Image 1 (cartoon, helix red, strand yellow):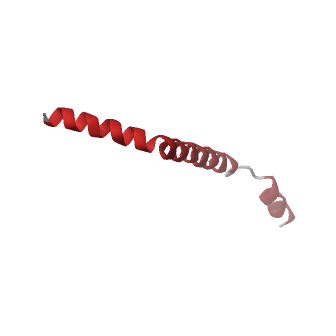
Image 2: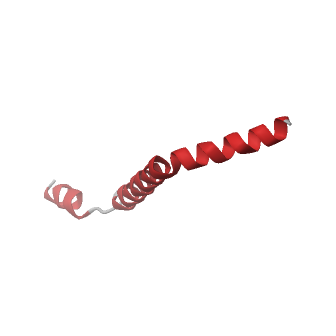
Image 3: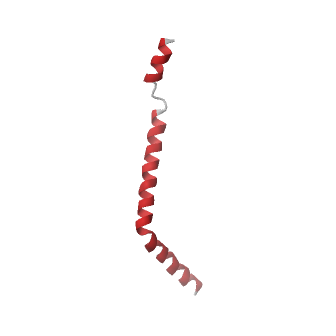
Length: 55
């Protein structure tokens, strides 16, 4: 029983999954920040492309 309790504190099996989740969250934050700063410019560019395709 004591060995099982020790293994709970030593076991690092789920650590990799948490690290990948943190990396994905940081990437998502960077993408959201970039889109918030560049959103108007990107929208304007797509509108220009759409207008040129229509004509």
